[in-house]
Image (spheres, rainbow, N blue to C red):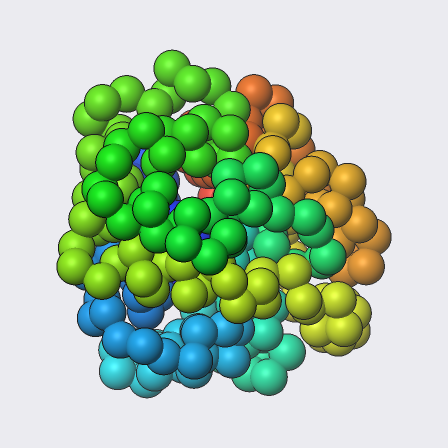
Length: 247
């Protein structure tokens, strides 16, 4: 299986999942271009680019078919990939997917402002990042320990990271896959949707709408979880995914 993170995170998003999933499956986690320890290049960021990256990743590792698990923007990448290359997909797990039209959270709106975003996130100041984590991604603030914060934002301190992240944010491509979701609904692939009931990033109603469009899909809404239910409720998430894959 291949795990694909969303915006703001890198492969550390899956730290609470990989070991359990790897007990039964071979697991890969990839950094999307512009995130983690990938190169910082001025690319044409968007779902077409990340779909191409996923294809190249699978080709390089000689992976013919895989179960794809993606959170937020990672979920959007999977949708785009699956409708164009369904023969290489076994099963699909969408975690709070950024697919349908949705308003930017407040910190996203602030960061989207020219100059303001650069000032807030360009000086390696921790406060805006902690605000973003707490207001958009994580429901239980106790989850954001000093160790957790340092781990998930470490890559953002790499030179040119702020410029790349703001460029990606300002492309506004996260919620543009309404037609693609409908196409995916016509493809016979097992599909699981996992949402956080308290998600501020993707309201639960949008995950419910995706479930309605993807006829035959399974929807699980986890309590006491925000935009990263795989992280905040990792034990429940791991159990759900393993049961889904075994079915």
